[in-house]
Image (cartoon, rainbow, N blue to C red; front, side, top):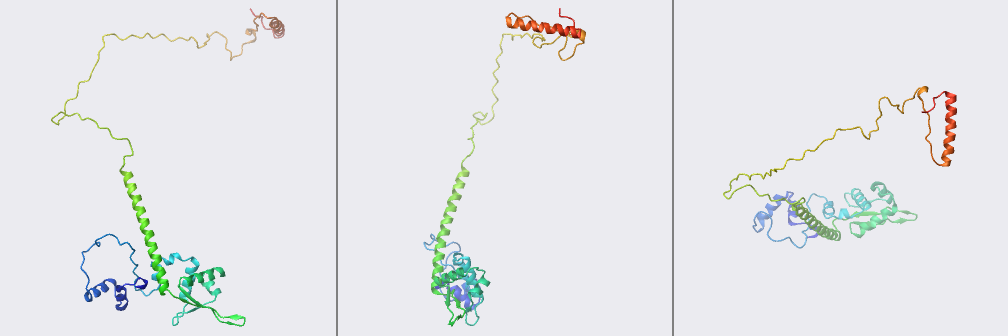
Length: 289
C-alpha cells in the first residue's frame, strides 16, 4: 500500500484499538496460517521490509520513520514545521510572508527561505500559491503541507530502502570486526608454555627423587697469603715533618733553589739566588743548609 500502511493500521485506525486487539480481530474474521512461535524459517528477505506506521493521528510519523526528516536541511525542517503549525484548521492553508517565515522559523536570510521552499516543492512535501499583485502591493503567498502526497510517500520509501542497505552493510562490517577481535583474543600473546616432566613412576605415583651428584676432591685448597696492609703510595708524612697547609714560624722558614746545568737556567738560578739573599738579609731568614 502507498505510504507503507498495512491492514493492521487500518483496523487500529477504524476501531481505535491497540496492535494486539487488531491482530485478534483480523484472525477471527480471516484465515491466518498457523506458524510456530519464534523466528520465521528461511533466510532474510532480499529486499527490505516496508516500515510500518502507526495511527497516532500525526502525519509526521512517515517523514521521521522513513529517514526523510534526516535528509532535509535545517532551514527546510524549520520552515516545514512552521508552515504546518500556522495552517488554518478548516482549510489547511498557511498564509505567511517571507519575513514572518524568517521570524518564526529562525532562518536569517531570504535566499535560504526561497531555496528551502523550492526544495520542499520539488519533493512534493509542500504546495505554494503566489499571492496576487495589486499595483505595487502583493499579497502573501499561500502554502499547504502535503505529507500524504503519493509522490512524496514514494520518495520516503526509496530513502527508507537505501537506509536499510546502509544499515545492513554497517552490521556486516561490525560483525566482521567483532569476529576479528575474538580471533585475536584467542591467540597467545606471550611466550608459549614449556612442558615440564613430572616426577612420577610407571604406576602413576610419585617416585623418590634422584640422589644429587657430589664430587669430592682430594687436593687441599690453596691457602692464599694475605699481605699486611702498608701505607706505601699514600704519600703520608711523619708527625714531625712540616705540613704544606700550615705556616712556619720565621725562624724555621727555608728558601732554596736547586742548581741546573744549562746556561739560561744558570743565569736564572743566579738571579734567584741573589733574590733569595736579599730576602734573607731583609727578613732575617737563616740560609739554607
